[in-house]
Length: 258
Image (cartoon, rainbow, N blue to C red; front, side):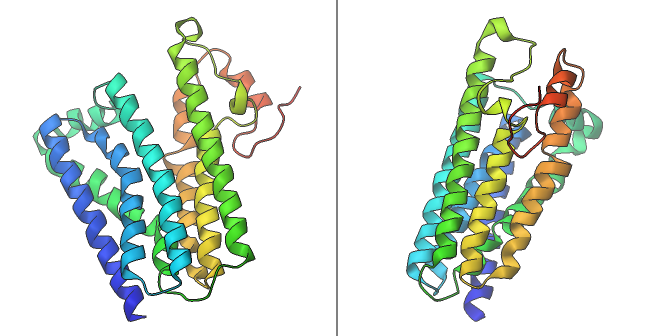
């Protein structure tokens, strides 16, 4: 238990440091949306803190650290490259900046960066909880790895397909309904869901069932808070989107209707 407490505390401190440093950079750049790059990196940091501080099964600790690193660096790299191609602050943060005026610098610390730090720490509980548990790899670990792999595939391929679609000027203003986007309106969010439930299963294989609160929070974020519902509200007026919604699954992949 002492090792778990130490891992939880060290992870919290590491994530807090990362997000506060990112906040300081955002003040210099006047761009709060760089927090999206730090999101994936925060999990990588927690993965290796848990690996280094835990005394549980070494194979599982290394497995989790590698899995979250592959996922987190791909996500951070994708978002970072997108920001370089399209510099400037996300409009939603721009609206906050106008609303809060001179107070925005401190409001952004609490409402964006510290909140993100808390969410990273909660979602990454499977990484932290499994680090203090013993026992070798079991069948459930391999199920978790398989689910993680499905998630990375959907997230990576979905993002790549959307990037190619947006780069085609002839398709500007239309709805992306090809590739994985033909099976689900949100292949990247579905992929994220699979990644974290896969990691949760690996933690559960070690006996850390309580850490499934992390994947549960991810699911809530993806489906009800900042994920698909938020995006679809902004897309609802696009020509052809209503028909796309009618024929395409909102989350879990399936063949389109009709």
